[in-house]
Structures are given as C-alpha cells and as structure tokens.
Length: 156
Image (tube, rainbow, N blue to C red):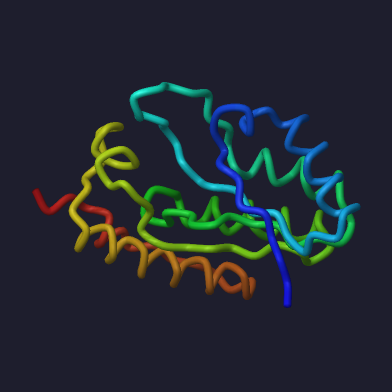
C-alpha cells in the first residue's frame, strides 16, 4: 500500500520554502507522495495567499529524490494546454519521472471560473477538458499540435 500527503496551495502551504521543507521531511519519514491543489483564487470567507502549483512542485522536486509529486486536480479547462504540456514535461524531467498529473473540471466552478471572468458552464468546461487532454496527449508524444479552439468559445 502507498500513502501520500494532499496539501492545499493556499494559506501557510503557499510558502514555497515551507513546502520544500515539508516535502523533505515527508520523504524522510517514508511517505510515498506529495500532491498539491491547483486553485487560482481563494474566495472563501477567510482570504488567504495562493501559490502556483507548478512553482510549489518544482521546489518539492528539488527538495526530494523519491516521492511521487503532482496535482490533485488540475482544471485543464482553465489552463492553456500547450503551456501545461511544457510545464508537465519540464517538471517530470526535473523530478526524474516522478510527476503524476491529476486532471478534471475543478471546483467550485463559481470560484475557479466565474469569479475571474471565465465561463463556468459545466458542458463547455467538459468540452475544454476533452480538447485539452487531446492536446496534452499529442504534445507529450512530440507530435505537432494544432489547436482549433472550437471548444474554447463561450456558449453564452
């Protein structure tokens, strides 16, 4: 059986150096993985700092040698798929192949999308997720990628 730590990228865990220290301790104590959230805003009742998950994971990769690292759920519909492909390949190489990418729609949709001016229609986001996964898969193989963006248009 394997065990991993799941941490937010908000509040005290938004401190990149603290996250590196925590991951070093987790690896030393036998944990198998460390995964972070992928939120942009933190619009709850208690506003908190939010760190970019890829910066956090870069620090974790450099601070550790064995544990798996990754995101719990990266809302692919919120990301530019070609850039996400480059970030994930770079981090996977840096970590020696230890990256696990969790993907999905993300939630809550009103915080993750509507609050920052993005459409939050689940059907549109699911179509963007599908398109993003197609782009990621193609980019990871090294093939030329063409994005039509047909799913990126708002339906409203």
